[in-house]
Image (cartoon, rainbow, N blue to C red; front, side, top):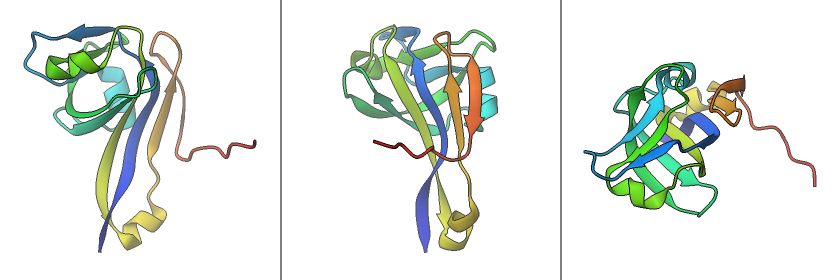
Length: 126
């Protein structure tokens, strides 16, 4: 049996630009792609924290060190500059692989520079 598991997450990155008249995709700072393990042209899910929009697109490499998160094409209608978004990639694993797999979770500052990484979501205490 195969299960779909979270592979990588960029947590609350800020959209730096939107480009409606573009072929499509989401340009992401190459440093964030490399650190997360998200590949260029890999399918990603984007969850907009500020307006609730959720959409699917694919990643392309942005300039390294730029902090770029550019939502392009039709998806540009679903985000605005400075919106906080969560970008996720998923993978298919066997149930045996899934039991030991750990995702890459990246956390950034206001300039989309990585401040820490983890492989588990910390427990929230109410």
